[in-house]
Image (tube, rainbow, N blue to C red):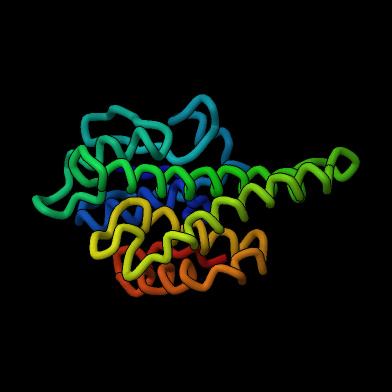
Length: 201
């Protein structure tokens, strides 16, 4: 398998961490959407990451679609998504909150850093960051101990951990008021499969 995209992207990193947790080997092609657009376009015409090239040559795009497939490869008893029922719904809700915050964090980064200065809007970015904080506050209210679903680590925890690390890089200070999420992030980063995927500039 080949994973396309840099681990700075929380969407790429959550796929990389999940593959590691499942001990699924892959080659990582750390292309940047800014500097390597032509390379990424060979895998995804939308020039978005991540993309995952399967061993038979099929290419999956979007982290949710990729992880839907990867979940089918999880070792017995290690799946990060519970079976259908209340626990699965709770995990998907928490994961959706984290993914939504990722989306808005990326959007604010683009607004503040990638757009031409004359087209940037502090007001738009501030609104996006308020949405990020709304997601963080909702996740913080779950009071993860040790994980968002209690004793069961799920994809929601992985996605929340990579979200927190991403925000610390691109929007410093925004995670300061969420101690439970910070503790969760630190617990997960002590797991080699996850911590080894942290972005190092």
